[in-house]
Amino acid sequence: MDYVNSFLKENGGNHVSHLVFLQDKKIYWASDQRVLIVYKRIANKLVVLGDPIGEESFIQGAIREFNEYSKKKGLKPIFYQISPEFMAYYHETGYRFLKLGEEGTVNLQNFSLAGKQGAKLRTRVNKFARNSYTFDVIKPPYTRELLLELKDISDSWLGNQKEKGFSVVSFSEDYVSRFPLALLSNADGNVIAFATLATDYKNSISIDLMRKSSNSPHGTMDVLFIHIFNWAKEKGYHTCSLGMAPLSNVGKCKYSFMSEKLIRLAYLHGNSLYKFKGLKEFKSKFACTWEPKYLAYKTTFLPATLLQLIILINSRPASKPKVVDRIMYLFNRAV
Image (tube, rainbow, N blue to C red; front, side, top):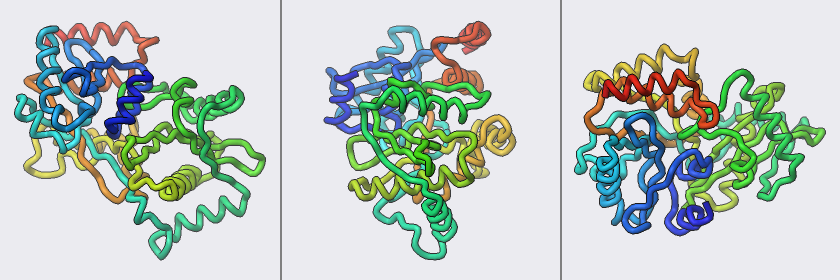
């Protein structure tokens, strides 16, 4: 991982490059180790997370190289959460596209709570300050006591939910220990919420793993985010990524593909399983811009591919249920 870290520092990353440090994915070095591709296999597919990373002049060749690498293995390559920047390269290599959602971004240079628009959030921040809540950003290494405290908060936040993987960050001591930590603490000095802060090694920072205790006061995450924006602005960052709002603004147009219209139904009616609308509404309090993210795929049975992606994100390597193996076997035969 040290070489990967050095490569990212030298070349810059993207909105998901920090997730390589979850160590649940494999790495393919393309163009004589000048391009980094992060992927994971599920059934008959190699799923790449985000765009290839490296100098732009090598990206198109890297996409073609990974395509050939997959074909030699008898597998289908797909790229998950790609940006519009390199879509022409994918298109020229024979890929089709499906919109997956949008990434929210805060312009830190313009961020302010001044005026009528920021009044509600400003009042919330002031209330926490009056009640002696404090904010701090610390850097590794961390004490064992702090990591255990954060684990308790993470478990409290998860409740009966299970950690996810691949494109969704999950808690582990090794992962948390790699990043600066934003901490919101109460008057007794106990942490009530935290977030890991990842960077693309350019001018952007990402609010990555975010957790709060189940008994934290209303508005805790708002206050944590606002403090992070102010801190990042002071440190000279230009933008802050809020991550994906899955399925956001997918299939709204009457000319949208049928697959995108079906995804729109999941967004509108699947809120009980995954808080699609609530997540978009929360991030919309702060986001200045929204960048679409896409799935780049070749000829495939899309419903099966989407189900495979869901299973990929929701299954942990250490505890993969047998039913997943059976489902994957059936879909492998179907597609």
